[in-house]
Amino acid sequence: MAVNEALYQAVASGKKKQVQQIVTEAVERGDEVLPLLDESMIPAMQEVGDKFSRGDAFIPEMLIAARAMQAGVDIIEPLLVNSGHKPVARVCIGTVKGDLHDIGKNLVIIMMKSAGFEVIDLGTDCEVEKYRDAVINQGAKVVLASALLSTTMTYMKTLVDGMKDLPDVPIVLGGAPLTQEYVDEIGAHGYGRDASDAVRIVKDLLAKTA
Ligand code: B12
Image (cartoon, rainbow, N blue to C red):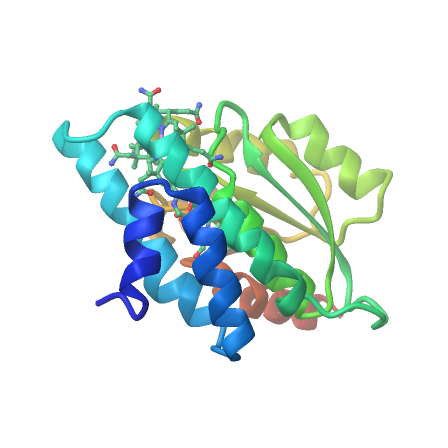
């Protein structure tokens, strides 16, 4: 059940201005911001995806819903992300080759930053070389990767294989089609169901390698 029904409907129907207004009002009222995301905006995107699966929505609808959600996320981000602290560690994240879905990745970035991490955003459609460059030349201590398509998820094995000569750098994977079994099978080090999970898993892995 959506906590903020108006926000849920505004995201699901792709009403960007309305999303901005509702989120701004909620923030001004002092509402908690994380439930706006977890209980209204993310389930609304889920509904759009379900409609797409049933043939009741098409790519433009997914796109305008995604833009509306991102507009809401942009307002929330500065409230979640602390600044001025010494970074816990530097990590990098990108969506894998062929995958343009970046909302989940952007949420992971927000949660990681709010937990004090410095995050190199590699963007979308990333080949192995991009992740390697972040580790070798930019000092990333953990690699995170996201995939939303069952077709692009298979590139995660290419990523894991392509990082084998850097065994001290844990690889954490996430995205809707992934499972713990798949992540174990391809030899990655962690699997996160959502953006908060990403923080917990990265912290655990860094504690083990410290
Ligand atoms: C919005 C959307 C789009 C937008 C993306 C815009 C953007 N900037 O992201 C557009 C319109 C571009 C799009 C295009 C396509 N899409 Co699309 N899309 C969606 C939709 C509706 C929502 C995705 C989303 O943003 N969810 C909200 C976020 C917050 O959730 P999330 O990404 O899962 O992230 C959370 C977790 O997974 C996790 N997480 C994510 N990444 C990571 C990484 C780490 C390290 C960790 C720990 C955690 C983590 O944390 C996040 C926060 O909790 C989904 C449906 C759905 N239910 O997901 C379909 C969906 C993913 N799309 C689908 C398809 C088929 C496509 C297209 C192939 C359609 C086409 N025929 O062209 C193209 C492919 C484009 C490409 N090459 O990538 C299918 C995929 C089916 C499959 N299993 O393969 C879905 C599931 C729709 C469906 N039901 O069929 N899409």
